[in-house]
Each structure stands twice: as structure tokens, then as C-alpha cells.
Length: 423
Image 1 (cartoon, rainbow, N blue to C red):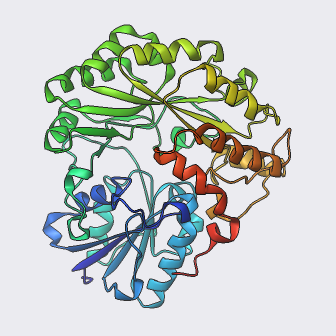
Image 2: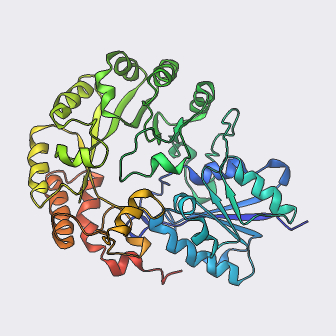
Image 3: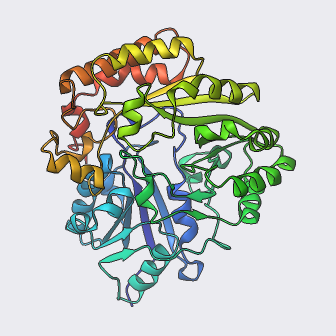
């Protein structure tokens, strides 16, 4: 039997997201992992999250280190992992990058978790204790019934109020196959938690506002309607990513509004219809955008709209076209990203085959830096146009978080973004 009295959970972050002032984690990954640790193992857990703290790795002394990372943070994960393994401490790595690239990740880890960890993480811990830990744990069938709720007390020793851990997820995966998106693949299909379980979890959340992390909560209209209906008596306000077509379903929109929905993040992606067709998102019709926004707002639902730049049908005019669109359509909070193919996805393979990958450092794959050769403009024009649009849209919104984020974004040069020398 292996010694397993203490484990350390580590969440590395990219340069612009590290050490935030408001001391609030931006995901429920660590609380979810804490909840999955089998109680019978009686393990002491320490959490370290670069969102809220600088990690002093030398002070960590655990029997096992578990790291969760995105593609943009995987190099930091490797730096931590290499350090701990050099000290004889076994390391497990999971997350999106590990899901798509388990063989690469396994070079830096004693074990890799690929996919949703609801079953594999507890099994890994049991196997570690029994000295039978495998190299790769892959998600198979998932049964969400009676799954433990994220432990919102996970950050208490970091002086984080459990009430501030207000994220929740009812569904996983997405039926759409938009070219740039990882969601159709990362969860190995679409999954729904029992509505009763979701409601019971909401009842335990003290915050009056909930942030749903579902990539496409409303894709199953019947499920979404029943969930919203059950939420009405709970008197919560909430926000979620949503498909634009929700605005065309009056009954669903009405019950969502009654249940407390006050904000949706809609992936408009582009104001160029040819671009939408090219990325398999032709079901978005630019001509419908304005009316869709009005329908949401008529139900007192604010619209956060996301737009992607560097799509193949984009040329340098896309920035002015998007700015003009936003002057005409009152989207409450636009958000901007750069087209990014994540390694291990079909889109990355396509870009690689076309010799269009111009950046191989995974830290730059943060959706704010150009990593591929655009089809109809230079990489420099794409990056500069992106910065200028962000600034132009938010220059008159000085009190918003996104104003401050986009204002400082150009200062995060490649040298700063890829730097792991602090580890």
C-alpha cells in the first residue's frame, strides 16, 4: 500500500489571469476535484490556485500532486510537474490539454486523466493507494446520478468566501461542431445531470447569483425548460452561455426569465455570413442578430456577445465592420477572441496540414494572440486590428472589467506570456 495522507491540487494560470486582486477563483475545477476524493481514504487536501496566489512550490510537501491545466497553461503545469517529480513526488495532470494530448502530457506526469474526471479521479486515487496506478485514465460512460457537489469550502484556508464560489454546471458537451470550438470533443459526447440534483445543488449555494458554465445549456429545449421551471421558486439570478436560437423560442425564453435568467453569453462569432458558413456555424444568421438581441433584452436579459477574429473569410475590414455593427446593435458586453486551433483537435490538424501554424509555444494559445497564418491578412494586421478594436469598443466604458482587461492586453508580449521562470 502506498502512502496517501496528503495531496496538493494545483491550478496554473496564464500571465494575464494570475494573481487577481479580487481573490475569487474563476472556475469550480478545484472544488469539484475536492468533492471527488473518496472519504474513506481520509486524505488531507491542500489547494493552490494561481488565480489568487503566487505558489511557493518549495513549501509544498505532499504524497501526490494533482494539476489541472488548459493548453495555455500546460507549460506551467509541466514546470511544476518536473519540479515535484525531481523531488520524488508523483504527479497527475488532467484538464483540456491532457484530454486531447495524453501521450504528450504523460512525458511530464506519472498519470494522466483524459476527459471528465467524475469517475476516473476517485479510481486513480484508489489505485494509487493500492500501488496499481495506471499511466492514462480515459473517460468512459458517465453516470451523473448522485454525483457529489463541488466542495465550495475548498478555498476557505485561502480566505475565499464559499459564497463567492457561485459556478455550477448542469450539462456537458455540445451537439454543434463549430470548427474552432473544443466542446464537441472534450466531453466525449453530450451529458445531462438529473434536474433534481442540479436543483439540490443550487439550494446549497448561498450566493444570490449563479454562473452556469454549460457550453450550450439550451440545446435540449425540453431539459432546459424543466430546469428553468424548477428554478423559479429558488429566487436566484443567473447567467449562462446560450445559443442564439433560444430567442426564437418564446415559451423557453419566458420561463428562463421567470427563473431568474438575467444574462446570456451568445456566440455570434462574426458579422460576416461567409465566415459563419466556413466554420460550420451557418445556423447563425447575421441578418437575425439585431432582433435576437432585442428579444433577449425585452425579457430583461442582458446579452454578452462573443466574436472571433482571424476566420478564413475575414480580411482587414472585419474590424471596422464589427465596430459598425456594435454601434447599431446594443449588445451589453461584447467579448473578442482570436481564432485558435487547439492541439489534438481536427481544426489543429487541418491548420498543421496547411502549414499555417506559426506558433508552437502552447502558452500563446490563449485566444488573445495570433498562432496561425490568417487567410486574408498578415498575422501582424490581425493582432493589431484585434487590439485596436478592443480599445475602440471599450474606451468609453472605463468602469467595466473588460475595459481594464483589454487595455492591458497589448502589454502581455510573447516574452511575458511564455515565461515560466518564476516556477
